[in-house]
Image (cartoon, rainbow, N blue to C red; front, side):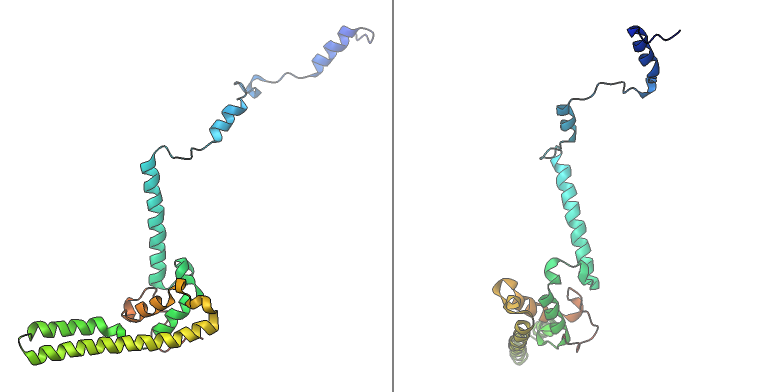
Length: 201
């Protein structure tokens, strides 16, 4: 066909011929979803539909985290311990208590031996009285030892970390004496040194 520039129909036909037809495979084949429907697909319910499964999954996550923290305390991995155990003054308290010889550490074994003596020799008044005096004497000595330890440790904590390390909310005193009366090999977190005498700076 000869193109005639003065004929409008020829120009329209030429423009239509210039646009290639899209193959059927490129078409969506479905209507465009409305915005409201698309937003509904992206929404997540605030309350899970299966509460039991959600609670079970939450408990599993907590248990795994606690297991990891316990393993870190058992192995002495400070970086993965609970946040409270990573406080610098608590690390200092642990190192200080682990470095010294604590009388209270042996109170439970001594009390066990005394109770066995009282069980087998309870009919002998002298043995019964002596065991009772020995047990209470050792307990009193362990308390005095803990008191002197805390007085000295408290001054060191204030000089190094300030009053926040010994404030009432920090529970540093309870943390120190409770660790001092535990048998060294069973303490958690695990002592960083195998033997006593490694005093913190």
